[in-house]
Structure formats: C-alpha cells, structure tokens
Image (cartoon, rainbow over all chains, first blue to last red; front, side, top):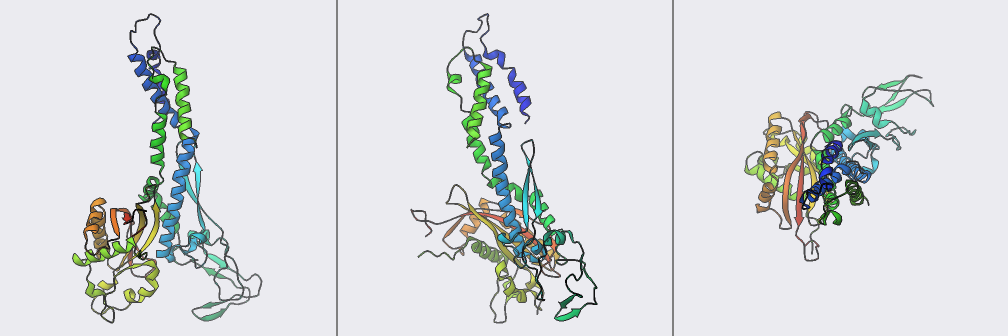
Length: 256
Length: 176
C-alpha cells in the first residue's frame, strides 16, 4: 500500500480532532474517534518508511533465504553430483564448506531486495594424474557457462595426460580443446536450480520460516497500542502531536 | 536408554514403501537380491554407490526394478517452539519409463499433499515407531521431469517434502 495515499486520506480527519471555535461540539466522541483512526493510519503510514523495519525485513528474510538456498543446492549436489560438482571444490560436491557460489543481496529504495549470485574462485588443486598440480580458479563460472577450454603447454614443451588408462603424448606445442569442461550435465545447471528455487515455492517457504511475519505482527501491535493522551477524554487533539507520537512508536517498536 | 538412531525421515521412507506395495505401485518381488532378500528401493543418497549395481544391473524378468528413489535431507530446524522439528527432505525418483515416473510422482503427491491429514495417516500406521508424532507433511516443491545426468537412460524428478513432527519427550523435554 502506498503510504502517501494513507496520509492523504487520514488528513481529512484533522479538522474533526480540533474543537471548533463556535463551540458546537458537546461531547468528545467525534474528536476521540478521529484521533484514534488518525493515530492508527499514521502508524501504518510510517511503518513502510521506518529504517528499522526495512532493515529487519531485508536481513531476516535474506538470512533465511541464503541458508535455505545453500542447503537446497548442497542436497541437490549430493544427489546429482554430475550436474552440480562444478560449484564446489574438487571432489567435495554437496559440502557447505566447499561451495563456490555465494548469494548477494541488492537493496532497493522500496521494501524489497534482489537476490543475485556470484561464483567464487576455486582454491583447491585440480584432479590430475601428473605430478604437476594446478588450481582451476574459475572452475565454477567456466563450467557453468559451458565455455570450451583450450589447454596449451606453458612450462613444458608438450602436453602429456591420461585418457582411459592410456598415456597420451601431444606433439610439441600442440594444445587440447575441452569442449564441455565439467561434463555434459553442468552447463547452466546452477542457473536452473537457482531459477527453480526463486521462481517456485521454495523461496516462499523460506520467507515463511524467516520469522519475519511473527516479528511484524508483534511489533506492529506494539506500535498500534494507543498512547495515554489519546485514550484520555478530550475535546481537541493536536494532529502534529499525534503524528510525532505515531512515528516514535513505530521507531521504538522496530528498533533493537 | 534413548535410541538416537531413530530418524523421522526413515519413518516416512518406511511408510512410503509400505504404501507403494499396498497400493500396487511397486512390487517387492521386483526388488529381490540374489539371496531372495528384498531391497527397499528408497535409499539415502549416502548409500547410492553400494546400490548402483543393483538398480542399474541387468534385469531378469522385467525392468520394473530399475525404478527407485534416492532421498536426502535438505535441512532441519527448530523454531521458537523447540518441541516441533521442521525438516525438508528431497526425494529424487528415478525411472526409465516416463509413465512410471508420472505414476510415482502423482502417488507421492496424493499421499503427502494433505498436511495434517497426511500426518494423521502416518501416525495411524502400525509400522511406525512410537517415538515420533507427525503434525504436518506437505509438498514444498516438485521439479519437472528431466533426463537424469547421474544415470544415463533414466528420467529423474524431485519432490521436496516438508515434515513437521515431534519426538516424544520426558518432563525435562529430553527424548525418551
């Protein structure tokens, strides 16, 4: 809901909260009810702009999504290592400490955020039958993109490697192209799992589990608790004072 | 003495196998090993290497025994109410026949989509251990059927179940 519309609508209550100079009002009911509704609408309008509320919304929900997404990919990788081994360190598919992916939160001006992902550099040595060991730093991103790899000798004259138990000696200076690094199942598989998680029901389950709904309910009911001066029978209320009280109540309810 | 080897997911796995047999979706006779023992075709992912030969090996009578399910826990959490455990489990159905995988998926959906009613049925099953009481079981997610990258020639489909359950406890809240 747009808080400006609420503020605009509730502003029509302001004249009803003030005692008219002609002295027509003989009881406090109209001004009392107007002040009550005005306070509630000000609380609701302030919630969306309250930095404490935004911070909690972003951090609680994102933290849960990050945890659940990681666990989901880990479980998928254990069940389908051929599809997702590339987003883990070598031979450690499904281990949370070996992940080569990381979610990032991109906050927006409004009450929402985007969740993107990055691939992390691999730090472990690539599996190799030769004595020379190397680190395939961009393992995850290269394999996910299905980019063909060209391997050329750098420190020696020729490439030597094993295929199906046979040692292959390449001609001097010749390179080898790996058409599908990581195997046929890895291309875009992380992206597909990411899309499935965020476009399907799993992200909703994660938001529910974050506990934000409970916190929102309890904090809002705290903020909506009427201050004593509005509960007191009076013939006139100050809209400015009610606005300040509503703002302070929202701030107190969502802080800490 | 508390039996800590009991696990709620294993209860669900046993119940699922019982219902698959009872409703003739799968037959125990298709899953006999060389010694005449039944191999339950619902296995944890940690046992896949040992079971691969059985499920992927040459078949004698028919190919029904290739259909199997691999399961793994996604995560377990306790909320503010520490008496109720919330657990997510992914079941991956493998079959070589598209029709078979459809049957398996729809059967599991039918069995587990009804939240507290599904839980009630599991609780009422006489084969369940007395340690657990299920409160709710539902389908959190179903992925589309795809050719499996793990097992050539197989189709695979994932079903994520969300389980809410309690384990019976004493007055101090410890498991009994």
